[in-house]
Length: 572
Ligand code: GLY
Image (cartoon, rainbow, N blue to C red; front, side):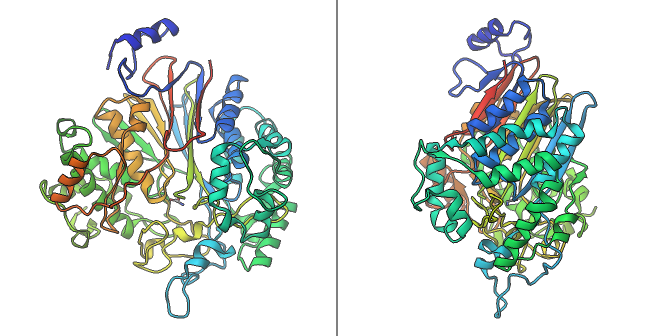
């Protein structure tokens, strides 16, 4: 993979130590940000800068990731959070080891299977998505604190300091933040606390350029800096959370908070040609189905079909359809349900699924069933990636579920509550907010973690990490990440090209393919001719935040162009 071109030659002048040139060449339509001593890419510029500053001061990738995570809780309130949960993959260069931290929310002990059913046995969507009942016990603070304690090098107080300064000193409201808050006004104003936190004193919307201070959030962050996870799960913050629950009829108790646990799980991995893909195991469905889809796709010569040609997209759609059918049946919290990971990831199973695809004609989702038995053997979430000069890296996705979660803030504590309980299957076959259906494996139970699609990924080639990526987007996360990987592994795109290329999505049910703007009219027409049901309006899919490194001290970063305000910040 040596492509010595004009642009590469320029890189060699700037970074003479670099002997082998990574995949980037003159004439590419999009170029990544280039850094030598590390890189942080997130959906919000200030938070990326804070992570990069921590790297520049000698912190490692985990220090920078924890600092960025807490900073996003201040600067990106729609998805950065203290009141949500997520997954963090950490690669430790010296030990050549990947750690998968599960800090997903847990259902409160009093939650039960029929929590969201009304008298007629139908799912009460308001209750599942916008009430105090929709909040799972938050995992973010425990997850970030544990990552820092076990794998960071600076003190927790040091990595929290920038976030505390931003919350207490205030940030300048950016255009994307003002826009996002305005769109969420109706939902946020249902909560008296949110109305106070996210709007001007007279109730009007904040405007770009306003200074926005978050005094209660600063106090909560200070308690975490002083007492670690106990600053959140015990003491004044816990009191405020439980008071909020009692006021609003929620379920989270002191005992639930004290019993919250981060779980260090074994990552899932699979191969695709020369590459090894490492991702998050259940309760994420992301890693399993990403690898399952790559297993199916590797049986076709994708490159020969041409990027985003109708024949290529047909294979992608049929692959997605089958993987999401399996998701509905077999995936859930592995602490409650035995997820058949090894069987789902077996190459012969992928072959069986591939052989069921008619190469000229779309299948009907109603004809595709979860198939293991045939085989014997928010949008809103946010991702960030960090890479340090020692080769350690973090790929982290965390979420409140929807943008701004349930919209309900904890009065006095300054943060929003997630509505992750809607990621459970409230009733077999009844779709959640993302149109995803599920059954027993993902039924509600106290202490259980709802199934997720969050798919932080680290891609390896010949044993070395070459890419960290991930995306928000609810059910679309897995297919967005899949296409980003294929763009690089099969079509040799650089990380910026791979980010920018138009994407598609299919999730079995509803039987509908979403095409991004940029998939041409001819392709759309050919897919329809093959029998695919194409969503009439194009829609934008995902917001990846990625870093690649194909050898030597050159990091390439790309924030997703689909949302303004993100930044790849290099350390040089
Ligand atoms: N809340 C979106 C997900 O975890 O998949």
